[in-house]
Length: 503
Image 1 (spheres, helix red, strand yellow):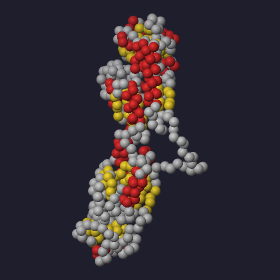
Image 2 (cartoon, rainbow, N blue to C red):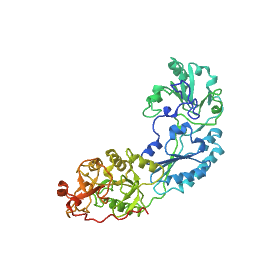
Image 3 (cartoon, one colour):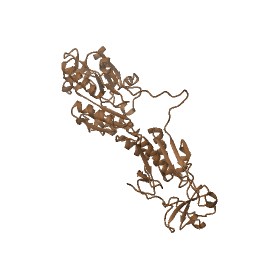
Image 4 (cartoon, helix red, strand yellow):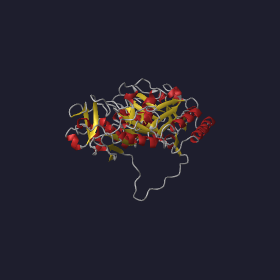
């Protein structure tokens, strides 16, 4: 194919002359799209294909696993398929194609390679995990072309075909012809007359309109196509013995629009599935993933409930991703006032929670649900990312946080959760004001005295020394009067926090 930028023929297999892969093919591959969607993507092929430009433009995304033997490739493919709940694994074996080119598809060598592939497919099929499917296909067909002048037309020896041609691209059964400036019409007429009924011969615009290259053609690709395009109708080949000696000597050839060249079957195999689930009652809908916001004042047991949810699900073999920010137990910890603690991912400023999940899943690791504690400290855009986790990755997200700060103003993160959550659950464990009434407001104290000015987020606790910044829950009446336990002389009604241990 001609590179419009250089005017030279571009061999996409050998990638000569050099062209930046990203400029030649700028669109995301299927594997990159899968990776972005949280699907574990992997390729298993010959090590020689690991870093080739063709691999980069057509197959980039996910992980590459190079193995020499076909058996190893099947074993690794099975391992990669089972590495995550959602996986896309591609494995390639090139020797069938190579044997066809060299010996032909009517040779014992080619049939032997096909039998070997059959054994490889069986080996992989026997290792498939439940709820998986194996698709076996080829990217093209192949036709054996006899070695005689009737079936092999030599461009390099035909002056009529060469007239007005600047470059000859494509391959023997599907040629792209690039004319010298102003000669495209003459070349089209000449090729139709010389090749007759043996080839379909069309101009670039005619081939595009006929759908030879699909329903639509990108403008960049449009400029790479030949001015004239010739596709073989019969068992015939247009070789170029001087400029393409190796290709001209091949027995088996592909290309063109004929069924033997363009048709390839796709066979599907799926292992026996587990019993189907009990049908839902009429009118019922299957459970959908949710973004749930559990909220309340301080001391109402939010973190305790988060830890209980994590415990219940992990006991059933599920794996969770836990986010937190500014937890009293320290960075990267989720803790409750009962002394329970577990590890968590500390969320920093600007962290992308959706991207973190996608990267985690793309490495073959699991995440069946998400817990976000201290969610009031998250930025609104991070709450949007949690909603995207629910919608795009189909994971339940349980967010826990207080709604208002010490000034009775909504935290931005909590406000966004109220706006986006599928459910908002107010925790039923009542925190109590020092007076014994139900606590509804959070207060910040300094030396026991309630303060109403300052930054929205200041890390403190309810058990600090008298002269330190602390927090206390109050009923609305005493919050309005700025009357804390210390200033009332009542003292705290709740015991000290149990020791928090990471053991």
